[in-house]
Image 1 (cartoon, rainbow, N blue to C red):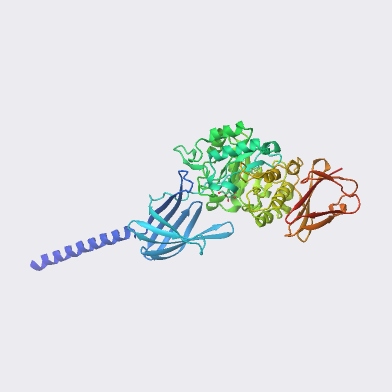
Image 2 (image 1 turned 90 degrees about the horizontal axis):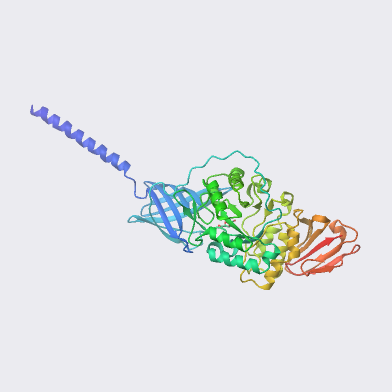
Length: 516
Ligand code: GLA
């Protein structure tokens, strides 16, 4: 008997032991390793607009291996490599952006219930230190892709028969733009001669956005207390107001984009009294491929057309996927053809002189956009800014000043308001100019104008002044022509025979209008 009960006790204890062990094993499997979880770094934006720059690290730790995703403002990376664990780890995130791979690297360690992490923009930069705290699972996750519509031709909105003219906040003010700045820029434009010269749009670029309300309506941040009142103000000056968004969940500066709210945002813009939208790809790159851009841009093209208010539609996707071939079909009035311009001779000329082949795609209502003007921002000479203005006019480019209109020199104002050069830009034939000839660092560009006139720009890209001679045959013209120098505002003699000789300053330009 004794032996039997001993056996029973033994069996029961073994069973108890096994079930305790099994429970412990299950628990061990379920209880996550310390780094596993969703972490967020929330940093107030530098301009105190009430919004935050967020970085989400959604991590899964398996012993010495960490997988997951990193979402930082507009970028969404998959963790492709990791080393270490809670006491010290490095994570490498990677994402495909068009044809290139972007990478980001974080170093960190777990201290209490916080992650102390650091990252560098470039390997040689000093590290940025951050503290991440736990966030609810799913917060900050990339939304799922929305299905894309079939392509169709969006009806022409009838706007921008000549290239849009105005001002945009980005080049000078970037994230510092606010309501007071926009009002005072409108005041300046209305009174300093720019409005008379044809400038019309006051465009707020990125960083006006906050989040959305419970109904999904986009909100403005602290810098823009009342967008409708601001639009009313700008309109009261006889000017128009433009705004900015992205087809992605985030804008380039990491603010709220229009993803999934396209029609709702178009309605909001119309209700505020917005007249112009710049729609910037950025955050959409994490959800869609470049090949899907036409469909993505068509969504907003359709949404804007549904509004009673005419709204100019400006595509900004840096000229990818040959946007000039489809920009008009998705409702675009203009499309950026390149990456961002900088206030530097190299940047401006690299962009401007590379637009030659795009000429056939510009026409009334639909323009190539080599980016906004840097005239007056301080890092180029006045001759260089004249070259910038002349080249953009030859290119039938939008003329969006990007400087502080409240405090520019008379010389800069004169460059921006040169009505004879503006008349070339705004010529109603809408034919973009092209390079006629090039000899070393000197280039001759021509542009056919309405009524049979011709604009001629002779550019000297060299560091020294250059003497240039031009014969009528070089321009494929003959006979008697009248000529006007559009920078000295004087008639000049154009030889029907012989040569036209002129000395052009370093990085300078001569611009003529020839007419019969
Ligand atoms: C991109 C655009 C710029 C500007 C910024 C704003 O870089 O190309 O023109 O709009 O975004 O974040």
